[in-house]
Length: 145
Image 1 (tube, rainbow, N blue to C red):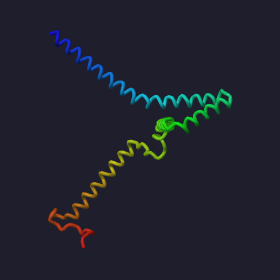
Image 2: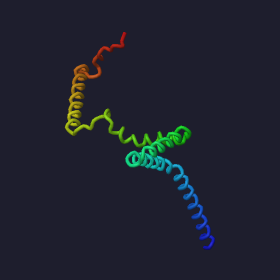
Image 3: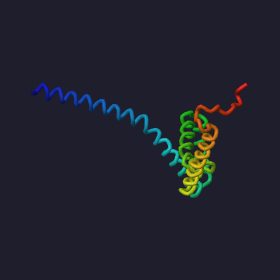
Image 4: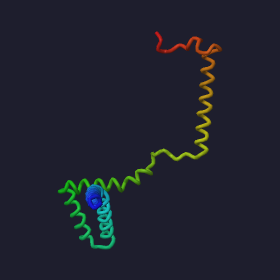
């Protein structure tokens, strides 16, 4: 019984250690995707605050530091583009050019129109087939020579 208890404790420890490593890896992979846009939103907020309340020299210094970092750091450049894209995606979702939302009446009219067209096609097929069904000669094709 003691051996079973010890084995269970060892198995629990191994499972918990692996689970902890999985959580750390998940944190290392996922956290930057949330942290970078949050940092940029904060930086943009600081810039807006500096425009409104601080002297122009301080705002110029903030812009200069950001542009220098953008020019020298590919990681900062990639993070800037990613955060700007993530912030613009909600705007692009409602941008004109997306299909308009249809009302229930329009949807019902489309269904009624498709039913009417399928009835007309069935009537034309019945006329072409004739009274003998498939034994009737098929209509001429444009591809027959």
